[in-house]
Length: 444
Ligand code: UGA
Image (cartoon, rainbow, N blue to C red; front, side):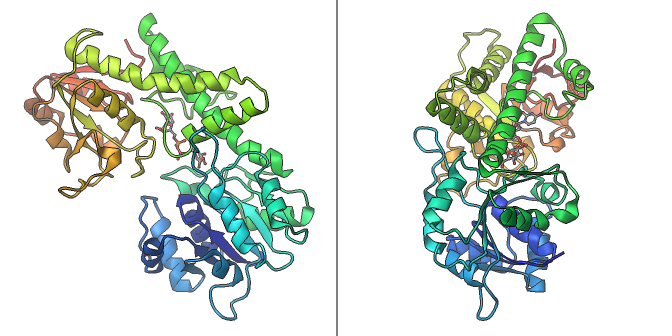
C-alpha cells in the first residue's frame, strides 16, 4: 500500500474519524479546523465527542507523528511544517447545515475551496466527503477552475457511536469521479478493507448518500406507522418485525420503533432530498410522507403519555411532573442535535408538563448557564432523581443501562407507577413485578 500525505479539512465526527483512521492505516494526515479551542485540545489528544476508539486513535496518531492539527486549510494542504510536503489527497469534511428553505447550505464547503484552489499541487485529488446535493462536485470543479486537480465524491456511511468501526469495516466504498486517476487514487486508500467498491460518476455517488439515508428514514417511518396499526389491531410489533426481517430482502436491522428518527443526518438529508426533488419537478410523495410520519410520531408519543397519565386523549398535562430517561438522539452518543427525545420534551412542555430528565451522556449544565437545547428539561445527574413526584417515567433513548435500573426502588419514589417506554427496551415483567403499568409502542 502507498502511504499518502493527506489533508482533512473539518474535524467534526466525520473529519476527525477519517483523519484518525487514515493515520492509523499508515498515512500522514494533517487535519484543519477553524475552531481554535478545539484544535488546542486535539493537539493534546483531547476528543470532545463520545465515539468509541476515537480518542485512542488520535493519541496514537499524535504519538507516531502521523496525525497533526492546524488552524487553517492552506497549511493543511501545503503540509503542516517546513519540508513536510504538500497533500496528495485532500478530504473536505465540512458542515452542510440546513438553510431556512431546507436545502443544504454549501457556504463552508465553497469558501474552503476558494481558500485552497491555488495551493493544490497538480495531480492532487480533492475529495468531498461532506453530505451535499447532486451537482456539488461539479460546482467545486467549476469553482476550482483547474483541470489538473480531479474532484471526487466519496460519501461516508459512518454512524455516530460506531464511526471508527464503520470506517475500518465498511459495507461498501463509493467513489464518484469522472477521471480514472482520481477514482483509483481514492479507492486505493480503502483497498485493504476488501469491501465492495462502487466506482461511478460524481453525481451518482452524491445520490447514493441521500438515497441511503432517505431509505433508512423510510424504513423507520414504515415501522413506526406499522407499530401504530399493531396497537389498533392487537398485534405485537416486535414479532411482526422479526417475522418480516427473516426475509433477506428486508433484513432484521433498523426495524425498531421509537419516538422518531433524528440526529444530525437523517432529518436534514431527507428534507434536502425532498427540496432537490421539488426543484427537479419530481413530487416524491413517498419521501414527503416519510417525513410527515416522523413529525407525527412525536405527537403520537405525547398522546400516548397523555393517555397513560390522565386516562384521556384530551386530559391536561398542565403541572404534571414527568421523569424522562434519555435525551440524546440515540444511545451511544452525546449528541442532542435533532433529538426526538427533545422534540417530545418540547411538546410536553408546551402542554404544561414539568420535566426532569437524565441521560448518561448529558452533563448537568452549570448553575445559571443556559443550554438552549435543554431549555425544556431540568437535567439531573442520576436516573433515580427523575423519579420523585413523577406521574410517569418516560423512556426516550435506548441506553441499555435503563433496563438494569433498580425499578423496585424507583417504584417507591414516583407519585404514580406508570412507565411509557418509547423504545420497547424495558423488561415488562420486571416492571410489572415492581408495580408499574407499562405502555410501549406497537404492543397490545
Ligand atoms: C445515519 C446513518 O445510519 C449513517 O449510515 C450515515 O452515515 C449517517 O447518518 C450520516 O449521514 O452521517 P446516525 O445519524 O449516526 O447515522 O444515526 P442512526 O444510527 O442511523 O439513527 C438515526 C435515528 O434513527 C436515531 O434517532 C435512532 O434512534 C433511530 N433509529 C434507528 C430507530 O428509531 N430505530 C432503529 O431501528 C434504528
